[in-house]
Length: 426
Image (cartoon, rainbow, N blue to C red; front, side, top):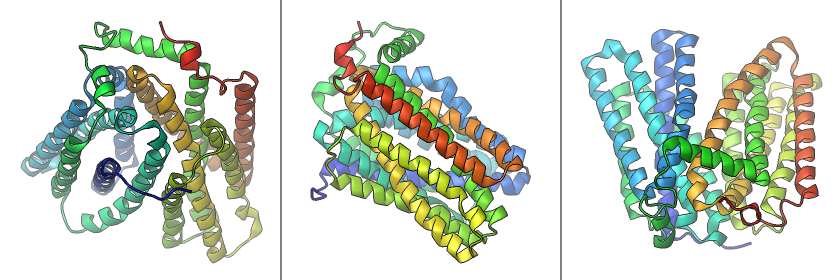
């Protein structure tokens, strides 16, 4: 194990991740609660939830084009400034026309989704510019930990603040977090050699249109068997994980009759596990290929899915069920970190710098779209079938998918030589 020595560059990045995730998490919580209280409609809430994925789908080609062809620091600064202006506009609009809160909030959600897509994709594609290759695992692990901490704290603090201030004040508070992130972005030190490759002047295909640029990215994916497999796996993880997102609340509250407090504690355990997983992984030096680590962890996730359904037939007390799911969700959080972080780190190293914006934008969109699909599928199943067979079959299917995928990877020897060297894009 290595000591956790944080460089100034790492601390800056963690500040950006925490302030961005914590502030937006609080605001998202407040917006959802406000719409639900004002409209009393699940449909009204649903429209606000599907707005983000739809915007992401439309933006995918444009985000990749901008990130791959323009200076990353300027893209992030522009995203932060636009976010702050959008929040400022919403705050004053809400004060002037409070009865028009719903369209105002939808417009705000769209603005925030656009800027977040640009910021998050650019930041992911910039990691290779900001840190040496041997630092990537540690940085990505700590990023996961700080994001999990922000996700854990945001609804707790947000619920408290929501009782004290109106939704427009929430927007003004969020501006403060965005400005902290903006200032910190200006302090980041980008590798001048790699950063210059991102400038439109020096990009090899700077005359490409947005659509041509996007098609080049798709062509790259089609020629890279390993990368295609990793992207399909990332999307599959989100689909299968929907079983836990949908089924666990239903099982705990409806079937096992846990109280709201008990359920809240079990739900928080996932963020605790992800925080711990990020810290643990930041200390470790992996002895196996990162893709192998990810798929072994994915097999563990399939076991967690199966274990999630067992309490339905055990007849345990509420306290024991609470303890059981606290432990299971902590393990789940650690496992998710060991799935995502090694895979993301490897992709950052494997994908050519000029392609990272397109590929990560596409990955994020596919994953985001499959989550609602999984929610619908498993929502229907849990309404008609008991939890244990659903969790058991889903876990077995995930295990089968994992085994088949890693078998194909090893049989074709895709881990032996990086594909971007074997099959370069011409």
